[in-house]
Image (cartoon, rainbow, N blue to C red; front, top):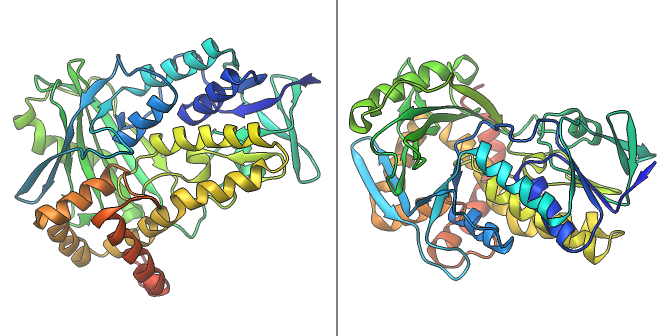
Length: 405
């Protein structure tokens, strides 16, 4: 048996962040990534200011990324272009960094720090009773006192540990493509919040234009499972409809590659147990109101390693408590809110409020930028705390009357 100090299943942003922290601390860490080196990950490619802050905590530069200074929100005929706010916690800029390059950069940073990375290697937990004591991969067995699951919510490893999406909670679907545009170097993301499907049904989600600074834009649409008629939603059709809207103002070329879709987990039945924790998507850390999770993945990956370094024996419980204090209230509110906006009338009303005034638009910007959590001061923090309490009371009714039923 190959002995290690720490094992990481999954080499995306969350797994790489965990490995970077561990290797720099002198920990013998091995990462198992089922894809090849340089593999692509279908995504919107946007990095929020929160993600930039996480990269700064990892002391990693964003020289290869395209800087983004704000967000342009469109709801019907209303357009608001807002700059990312300046705060003591997060920088006033984000980025767009195509995942093929971004993920490669991160995993290469882990290797440079001293982590062992095994590509084309799908790892599964090895159990002794209910405790994870290692992993098996490629015909070999590796043992360690601590394992970090960073392989998403839909793989075999997640199923073995019960770190699957909660079937009673909402999830998202999204699709993206790349297209050439002369506006590729713009410094604002664009989000159209007033999408409709081919039947005219309002879609709780948004269409995006994320300029990549390399001659292309990442164009995509996403929707929540709480919408009316979700099971019949055709993502390719929705993307084509949105593309027709933005083609002229963005002078779009044809899709460079075939559009690719993916599922966005927004919950997890379990995120820790004896000898293991889940981070990133595997822990359900995806904002239901924008589908973003890279920043949460980076933060949770670092936090998991930090707790392991402090005390491997208590790391699972301590990590779960700390990460819950940081994220749970906001993400729980987002999931409950998604049931609310699944109703077309309530969605239309919500959109008018979201961008109706400068004050509400600033709060919407904070939500869309993942800038809200248990430590958020000011109006955005107060609104989310009030919403958490109000939606907790309304939650049973929202679930009974969800639009998809």
